[in-house]
Length: 208
Image 1 (cartoon, rainbow, N blue to C red):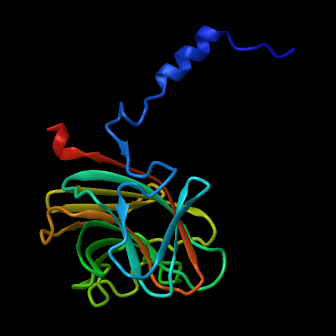
Image 2 (image 1 turned 90 degrees about the vertical axis):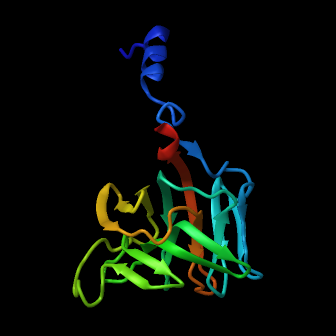
């Protein structure tokens, strides 16, 4: 015979689970609309469906936060389509001009080279890690198609770390950008829709 759990036990178990606020995180996406986000391009579609951000375009573009951030721990998830060519990523400490977003990016790529979680400098220097010359044949993570991929990005001063599904993939020192926007990438594959959810941030500098 299955017995119901006493109410006081349920309350105790609920209280024992820390909330995002208790851990110092806050949501960057409210799950309902794109408040706090903007598209600095004249092309690209962004909308909310079923509590996730969806992007579609025929040319590369980025949806970015209105806010800028310096030192932080960022969590986010990306869902690539089940079929066809795809490529995406998470921008952090990104810079913008009308019609252009550039700067740090955590890569999301399903190619066999397995560079998902690599550190790319969008619109400037290209690959920082792995380096095609210094790290030939280096494998990180091959992004799965049709599955949610968990990202954690930690930026403290010039120390930048990227984790994919709990596994550290990049650990570099780079001082080019000390602050900037968070961004979601559509690489420009026509007809492909990329989805993002659970976008939350803890600002480390504010804890000190």
